View 1 (tube, rainbow, N blue to C red):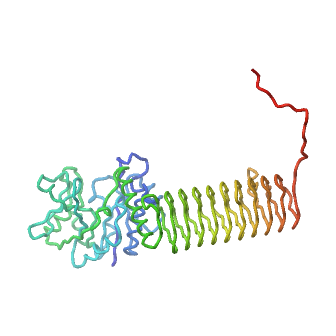
View 2: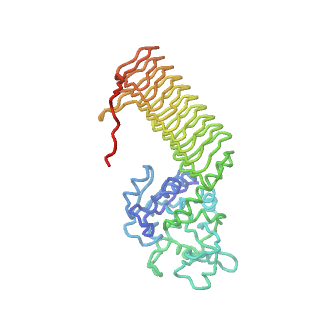
View 3: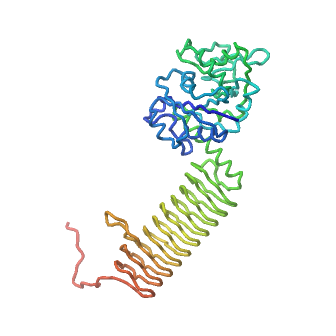
Length: 454
């Protein structure tokens, strides 16, 4: 289908009490508007028109998509007025889908049947039924069930307010028809705005064919106007994402206490404990275990890796059967080869850690090329920064670095080297040798410990 999506994103969102435009507030780590754009992309490769108004430049700059055709609604005079701004981009033969940047959770599976109606029908409305329809426009039908009009809450009498079938605002229409009906809109209503919903009455008046598609899950059509609604939709979104992972075989120990803020792909027998946060693009191999309170962002975790509690992995690649944490931080640009161990309170940045190497306690490794089967003692630091430039440390296979050592880059620790505990290494070391640097130990027998003055 040649679907042209028009996404309304011009509102300020006063009740959000924020300088950030409402549609740029996030659900699942992604702006609400981006959710709607992504759903439109799933429907069709056709053009997307974004209607912006308040803080337009902030919205446009916040969406990294050069293919979107942005149009400005300089005065916010209602939904009909917003769509009117996009009329120059509508062709007569288009199937026009009108969606909203603050209704982020509607699915393409819901919208596709709506768009598919156009051809047989001129106009299709997405509706749903609510137990408490307050605030929504009501669908008014004749005794035969035909849609006659939509009445907004502020314009409704007591009888119409009893109707529980509501207008979601999301519609599809023939391009030629919607342009004609939009041209007939006026602002003679309680809000002095141009309602998109009034197109229904114009369609009825000219005898156009109108249908509706029921949205079975009302959560999909919930909009965000305040922080409470944002929090509610965040939980709906998280429940959806967690359910998808469990359907793929993931064991999630408490589905209410895991947050997915991106795209997660998983192998078999993955286990995720409470308070894990997965951000961006994350890939978890077979048998991965994520313990409590871990954050994993834009990373690949190989098979049979255990990420122990309170660990952070960011833009890194972790090889098979690694053991990480607890309280480890793996920073961007790090790659761990298979069977590497990164223990508690270890930070690694932009480094390659070889197969079977161990950094078990209280260490910082930055800008380092580390070979296989290296052992790094507790308290070891690669001194990679002189205040201006970063320098590299190279550690060869089978090296042993004693505790509390400082490796001052640029420096190379040769294959098989042993570094004595407490050393500051500033020069390259030879293979299979012990290297150390220590000042002479002195004991002063006559020294007396200070005593507090009474």
